[in-house]
Every structure is written in C-alpha cells, then in structure tokens.
Image (cartoon, rainbow, N blue to C red):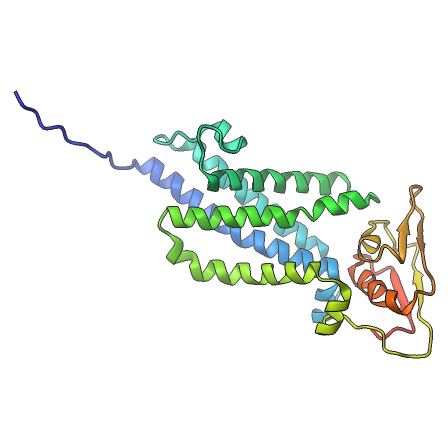
Length: 269
C-alpha cells in the first residue's frame, strides 16, 4: 500500500485576510504620519515654518500628527494578535527577538516602544524646564529611523516593495533632508541661506526676552547654550549683548522659541 503524501497549504480564512488588510492599511497610515510628524516637528522647532508661511509655528499640529501616527502604529501591532494562523504573540509584540523574531519585527518593536516613551515623556513634562527632556525628545529621530527600516523591510518581505516605493520615497525624503539640516551647525545654515547671519552693521545687537511669554522650555539653551542658560530655580539668564560669533546662535534660538519670547534688536531678521 503506497500512499502519496501531498502537502496541502490551507487557504487563508476571510477573517485573517481582513485582519491583515487592517494591519497593512494602518501601517501605511502610520508611516506617512510618522514622517510628517518629524517634518512638522523640525519646522516648528527651528521656526522655519514661520519664515515660509509668515505665521507663528503651530506646535499643536506636531502633537496631532504624533498622536495619529502613534495610534495607527499601535493598531498595526495589535492587529497581529487577532490572526488565527499566526504565532505572533504578546511577547513578540513587546520584546524584540522574542520567540525567534526577525530583525524587521525587532526594529518595529523598539521603534514603537521608543515612540510611546517619547510621547508619554512629552505629555508628562509639558511646560517643565528640563534640558535633558529636550535631548531625550531628540531620540525621536532614532525611533523614526527604526520604524522606517521596519516598514521597508516589511514591504520587501511581503512583496509590496514595488507598490510602495514611490510613495515611501516621496514621504521619507523631506524627513531625511530636514533631519540633516536640523543637526547642521548654525554657520553652515547661514552659508546655505537658511539662517540670516551677521549683517555687519555697526549697531550692536541686543537680546531681550519677554518674561510673560517665556515658558522656560529651554529650547533656546539647546540652540545657543553660550547665550542662554536656564538655572535650577527656573530663572533664565542670557547675554544681552552677544558677540559677533554668537549672533547666528541667538537668531537660531529666537526662531526655535515656540512662544516667540526672544527679540533681537539691531540684527537683520
């Protein structure tokens, strides 16, 4: 009695197909809004959006994009728990490489958890004067990088790379460009024409800070630590007459201030 053994691959159930469609759709929404969150955050923090639009930087838009990106990312991750024919469990969703997980899943887990930590920290310390909190918030660049790697590796593994190639590059390119510009020193930005440097006027530059508008976010100190210093008691100390080399830093700090509390008199704006 010779029996032929046939390998049977069961067809995916309608339930699993629907869940996978939700996972794919939420992933694409999360990817787009994640890149837009980074772009809007850089434009708001640097004040460049005010230079382009002529209006005050709306930091609320950054928060809305971040919340939407976080929500769709969480939906994308949780959706895999509802697939019947998959072994992706809670541990694999929370711990990188749990259960022999692949690198792209680990990148997604670490990136999403870091994104959540940044969002919680920003919400808890809102209005607090903490330079270290500002530095930690900049870890968002690393989180976006990990999630972008996860997205591209996932699209490649699922055979969707050709479909999302154009859209993915289109959204990711401005995020990468602005990230690079964000970390460049002010002198380089002045040479590129993105910041205005010293105009060479004989009139000295004077700095003043509106105490009623200043919320002590310490963003000015992150931009120009030689000019602005936030003390432990919450008082902001600053140079009223900065030197020529410090003027570009002061101008960058003035543009980065979300409350527009810093005024430079005698400097080309």
